[in-house]
Image 1: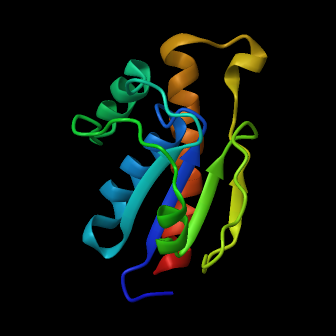
Image 2: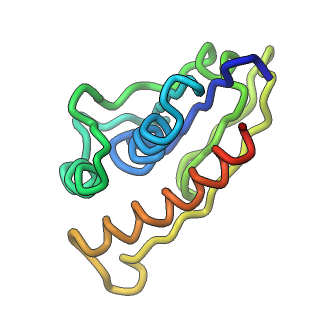
Length: 137
């Protein structure tokens, strides 16, 4: 792993979960970790509820937009983390990281929607990110 590790978060749309994980790690780690996020089928805009609940914790998605996952992002990353079960990512030649999967809470499966759902998703992702940051230090 490089002196400043690079973490890549991936989900399907890169509009919610992967963006939330990236923003949370940026907030916690500052410049000690390089952070990127991407989607296997990126959406058009950041999920507004994701943005709102991150702002409640002081994180910012204002300058972010969904991005397409590409081979170069995968090659540069020291840690590659796929959030949820939907996104499928295959290794590419030259990757130095294995592909990890975080199975995150999905409150909508329990009938919880809206801001309450997104807060639970945020909190679950935050727990994962704190564990990751502890490993990276």
